[in-house]
Amino acid sequence: MSNNQELVFKIKADFLKALAHPVRLQIIERLKNKEASVGEMVKELGVEQSGLSKHLAILRQAGILTSRQEKVTVYYSVRDKDIFHVLRPIAEILRKKLSETNEMLARLGKP
Image (cartoon, rainbow, N blue to C red):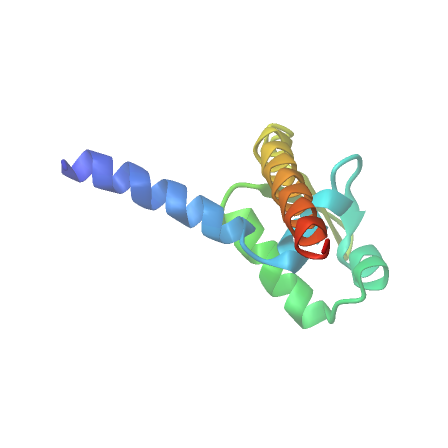
């Protein structure tokens, strides 16, 4: 494998790692339709501000979120709505997997 191919795989893996946390997925979902301040997200998501700030920084560094400052308030939004084209198929795969698991469990429960 060439160095370029390895770099591409590393970039992809780093991007997916940025998504690989329940709070980060909640943040992205919260920002789906409109921006929010850190304070709003602390209240809505029930996350400590210090932890939320770390997650927001990771998502910003990955290019998933963008921020703007208005006086002392920082607002975050999704940089590119195409991220939902990535997340939607994942949700569909998980729905199928859950359905198959439920069917299997139902068969196991029959005499």
